[in-house]
Length: 90
Image (cartoon, rainbow, N blue to C red; front, side):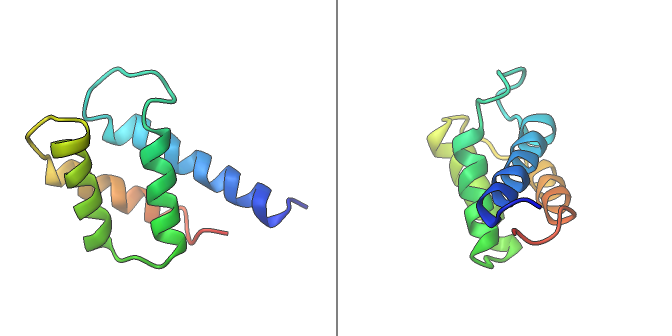
């Protein structure tokens, strides 16, 4: 049986996979491109943050951290829904 830390790392890896596959606002990036953001999202979920907070984080990340200046809210909603389907963080 996996330890709590190991279970969280596995779950966080799934969050990262979703962000790379479904979010990817830059397009065609290496598999680890969004790991930092996935880690923050995973921590936010572990801390019981709501979907609105997750959406705000993704918007701030796209507009300011990545510098796209735009935000695809529908894509972000789909990403949050996919991550929520993973269940709560271990």
